[in-house]
Picture (spheres, rainbow, N blue to C red):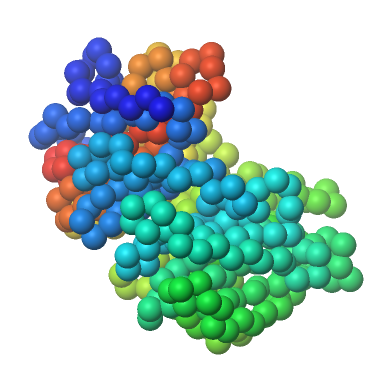
Length: 378
């Protein structure tokens, strides 16, 4: 595995391009170091331990880095992938759909912080259904596994099963239950967000079928296994959500893209839409948000834009400030397509980003991780 650092050299290795027309220019206050890991398939997720060590991951593997982003180790699970990664005290826990084409299976594995496997569990969706979304959460000293499964072959094609499993730290199953939910809309469950051991949210996309070409975004919240509220969002045409995140006040942010526009919608705890961001750089064919972090200066979104001066996709950062104005930044490593998939705060003044570099004319994806002080947005 190749690990190397790229230093911030404007115009040579790292490109800094553009700022919003409505706001003042962005002036970097720090010349940070960034880390690129070759042969790593890219990073689509990021978590951080209590001592600021970094965990980057994609479906096939997770990699641990020091607080300075030095490579420590990598784990490649064999039976199941990583749709969700959770830090549970002194353990790293992953949950995901099975590898190898078993669409109705999934697994959960726990590792020490040094990367040694502690235990592994395997599950099978009820009634020959297909697993659609998976999430695991450490809550009240228990692991809670929630997943959604469904099948178009059942008598009720709009039916979803929602198995919930409580797991002890030693891997023992403490309790399990299955809820069932049927709507009059055919949809795929993209995300299950665990809000507590008794409350969760499902985000789905309406399937394109029977002449309907509009893909609406569906949101359902459940409490005590009963539907509490539901909402449908979106516009005519293609829309997708790549991240669902809860803020400190219990509101929900849905982050993604619609048509050519980077898109984010905020719901209050009762499911009502209270704000919306539609962001597009002039002349760009595609803009996309992948994640959001809540900072003292506002909500910081990351993703990519197709408006690269060298013809490549560029990493995109947009800070949506409390007054509703935006400061934006696009940048990337030259001769690569650049996408930023995840953001985490080290503290209220420092932000870490993880993403993927795709080299020109190749299928080689590299993991890309770097930090910036929040004062990067002046």
